[in-house]
Length: 278
Ligand SMILES: C[S@@+](CC[C@H](N)C(=O)[O-])C[C@H]1O[C@@H](n2cnc3c(N)ncnc32)[C@H](O)[C@@H]1O
Image 1 (tube, protein in one colour):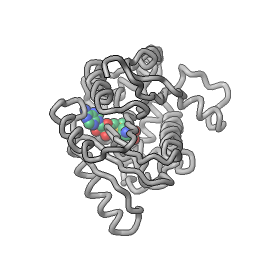
Image 2: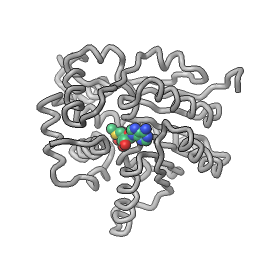
Image 3: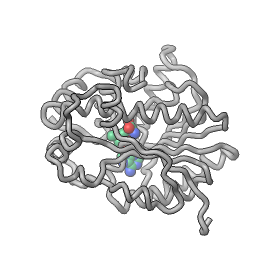
Image 4: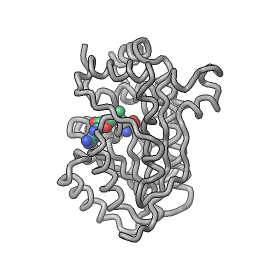
């Protein structure tokens, strides 16, 4: 059995649906389809049994962060790059404009499915646009810029969640340069990645083998050191947390579980600053 890259977005939606309260994503259940749980179980057995709950911590972190960004009363625009089947605009307490970008197959499926969920009264009405874009392509980035130009006066929050792992360093730089260009001072960038040292753990090797075997992928799996974010020109690091630390706070993992036994992801909140070049 093989799984595709967009299928990973379905599998993690299934994680969130299995733990609605922890993931803060009660609408994730809308994406659950027959056969997904088999992938969840397979991954738990072959890679890590804790990945499901740690992923939910990631969603919880971003949900809470967006809620706090919304609470300061600004007109907010959230650009979610590589959005997959995340459901933040529907789960959040406040209103914002959301623009989600992802590959064509994900966007086509999501657009159609969201319209069907809405028609059945399963989702509240929200201002969300789904844009088919390769976020590393300059041409697609220009299209996104044009769309963003229709929203002057909005403070931006850009989210890049669960994506950097699948991009190489050059592609990550291209995406960050794009963010730097479209963001104004005080806009916020939310990202997540594996820390560099995770790459040498056994659990990470199990993860990459799993993707090579099941996704038939070429094997570029990127981790980033903390200093990548600390030294990011034009950005100031405001907060960082990890999915393991959040799970520990809520007593969701054994007390003696070591960091190198799990796929711990680090979440970063970065604020755009003024630079001399601006
Ligand atoms: C693991 S999923 C994460 C989805 C979502 N952000 C979340 O955390 O729930 C990775 C998503 O990134 C998208 N993606 C990967 N590379 C991309 C690219 N170059 N352009 C647009 N989307 C991309 C995939 O299609 C997939 O939906």
